[in-house]
Length: 267
Image (cartoon, rainbow, N blue to C red; front, side, top):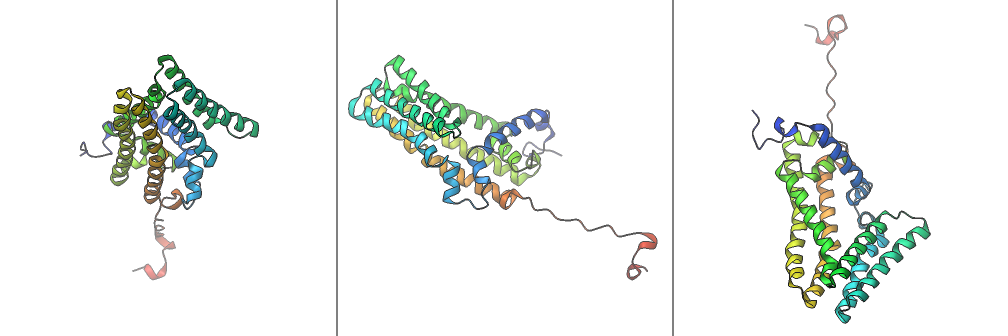
């Protein structure tokens, strides 16, 4: 009999086509992002982790716009100047990729985020609104992860299952299911921690709090994301084996019957 704690409860799989579509979409996204880049390496090294984070250029694209804003705002409290310099840095990185004919997806995504944040802050005239877009994303990601845990379709499990060629089979394995729930919860905690720190600073509406918000954004970005990404990949590798190859046991060949049966086995 199935119980509520049984990952194989049939009530959880009323429409597998929907979960298949979501899982495949997550896997495709994962292949081009952090965990997918680590999956390309048999041994997750510092080099592999750096590649998973987008390389040196990717890290600079992620960190520098916010750092420029933080430095200028801290010393000048000039919102337009700080925002303008931040947007110019993002534009420079995008142009660098276009000129170099390298993939521009990450740079454009960063530019859109920086641009939307700057527009919002310029409209309100408040420096803290430069971080509102990021706070909203943390809230959205955290909510999605938590909901996926509560409905027993953990997003990390969906992404990892399809990425490792396991599809939805991990849901039938109690150990894998619980591990995927735990990993998804860890990612939820990352976004929840950001919100717990950043929301009070945002709501303070002071220049000092805005500076603190910028510092928190930098310290709780890559420094938290990178080790959690590495832990996730190590755990997934442990479940599926090195390189994602699942261990299989070859069943013994059936014994021939009748006249083809070996003489030594006849009675």
